[in-house]
Length: 103
Image (cartoon, one colour):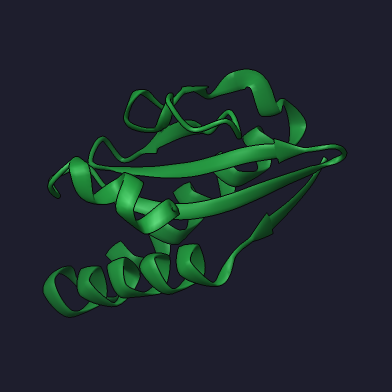
C-alpha cells in the first residue's frame, strides 16, 4: 500500500529529527530517519501490523500505531489502498493531547 504522510505528521517528524540532530549529532539523526523509513515501509507492506491506538480507539476511523525507537510512534489509519500517517507522536507527551491533535 502507498503510505502518505499528512502535514501534521511530517512537521512532527521533522521537529523530532531536528531535535535529535541538535542534541546527538547528524549521525544519530540519519539513523533515526532510517528507522522511521523502515517502519513506514513495514506499515505499507502490512498495514494491520500496528496495534489499534488505545488513545484513539473511540474515534470511528480505526487509528493504529507503530512504535519507533521506544519513545515515538507513527499514528495512522487505513483508507482503501492507502495508509494515511496522521501524526508522529512522542510518547512522553500528555496522552490526552493526541486525540486533540487528530480531531
